[in-house]
Amino acid sequence: MEESKVSTPVIDDVLKWHFFNLYCMALSDEEFDFTERHVLYEIGVEHGITPDQINEVILTANIAPTVPETTEGKVECLYDLVRMAWADGKIEPEERDIVKKCVVRYGFLPENAGGIVDYFLESVKNNKSKTDILNEING
Image (cartoon, rainbow, N blue to C red; front, side, top):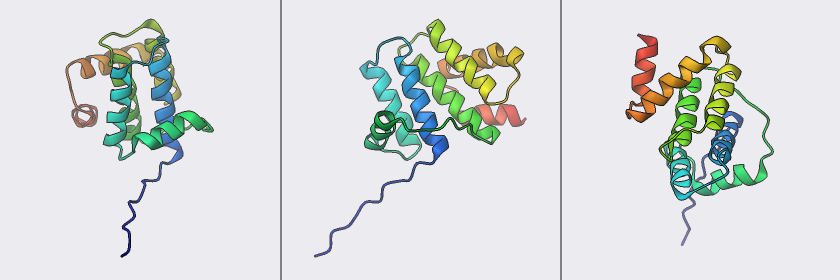
């Protein structure tokens, strides 16, 4: 009898960096509570990644900084990052600073970073989907 093997999805460098950033965001308030862990794994499921794969990314941390190339990729990463920051129902100043740094790292103008963070925060608070955000941006 042949055993069926479950294939493990391959995680590219952009996604590895994304999940490492999400983990760092969760630690920015010096706590990694159940809610944040749940949101991290939930985002993993949305990307087709298992909790074990996320744990491996976090534990190995042998990741080069990688920025998404497309607008869609940037929106997805920023949305997930703000979801992680908002997991405990509040945004600490350190969390906001991390998101602003990512906004700039993703190629947006520094003077627009605060407004972009505010937009994503309001979107997450109001349960607006990534698709809705992309539709708004693309008009």
